[in-house]
Image (cartoon, rainbow, N blue to C red; front, side):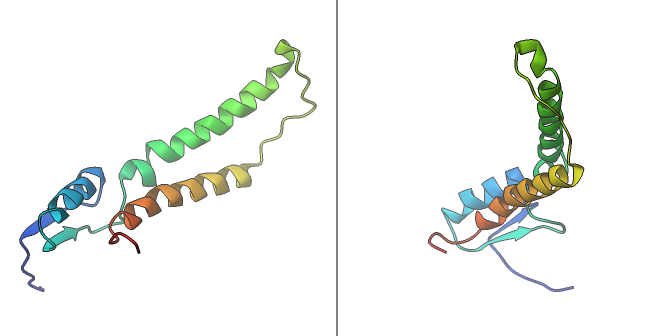
Length: 108
């Protein structure tokens, strides 16, 4: 096992860990962030954020199918599953990427 010495060790790179890292960095550069998995919150990677994007796509399709009730004529509503998944993956990567960039020094 490798030994390292640090003034502050933060376990977990989720929301709380990233906030703690930023707070600690205001007082010392000797901060270590320990994470065994991907950086970013579970919510952003696989939880509430991706699921809300799927729900939003379903709501748009549902509303488009009901548009005629409001005098709006939509000829055909078709769901492109691959496009929906591509958007969810893109947004997920953006959410999680922001967590990685938050650890970079200012100006990089």
